[in-house]
Amino acid sequence: MTHSDASHAGTPLQRTCPNCGAVFTCWNSPSCWCAGRTLPESVKSWLADRYATCVCPACLDRLIAEDAAGMQNEQDG
Image (cartoon, rainbow, N blue to C red):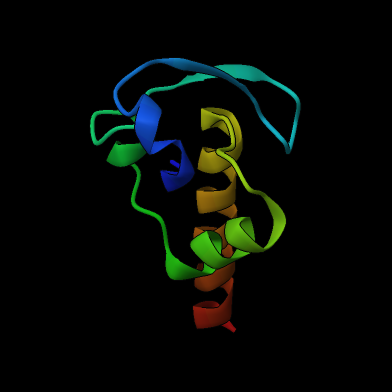
């Protein structure tokens, strides 16, 4: 969620994912779908460095999974 949209908090907004182009709904509030995701700091930083708005659920889940797999691979090696 981007906090620059505070005037729209709790209002569903149609967004286009800057990563894949999918259209999705952002609720811009603590009850948004993204609030249920646990974001590692590395994912937060990666997103903040690249995008000024939200990514879609599929991209966010993929990034979280890729980060977890990378962390697991580092622990195995």
